[in-house]
Amino acid sequence: MSPILGIYASSASPNALANSYESIATSAGGSATITFSSIPSTYTHLQLRALVRVTSGTSGTDNLGFRLNSDSGSNYAYHYLSGTGASATASSGTSQTGMLVRDMIPRNSFTANVYGVLVIDILDYKDTNKYKTTRTLSGMDGNGSGTVALNSGLWQSTSAVTSISLYDFDNTGYSFSSDSSFALYGIKG
Image (tube, rainbow, N blue to C red; front, side, top):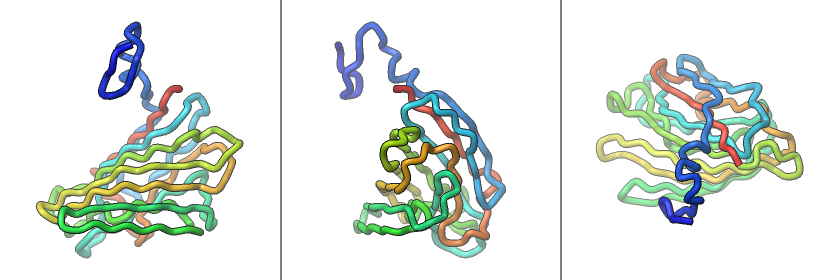
């Protein structure tokens, strides 16, 4: 066995990591909610990647929200850690109506061509014996006003995840810009 990026992989399969991700679906922005549905149960984990901006005319950033299986009950919890280069922030929340990814969606009047990026991992998404956990890495560079963040989340349900919906957590009437992009991947075991 040889180390590859700090992970040990069999020398018989040097492409094991590269072949572990399989594209399930992609979507462009242009609407207030982006939903991936009918997610197959053939993977071990899911990963969602996004490049986002919202069409609000006000300045600043919004929080991204996502829900699993359209559950809008108070069944989510999160931990959040972020840094701007000048300061660090930490927070948590329980009994939330959606998963929260803080301070990562630039609004329309924010610096031109600035987008938030994120990678959400949904671990053991099809396991019906435990609650679902998520981890999110996100960031946004606003030419000196950027943020990088790490979120962990919990969906208090043993249901298998069959759909994921993303929305603007702060302003549900805002739409994702039409040039926002979203991609869902299945991670093989």
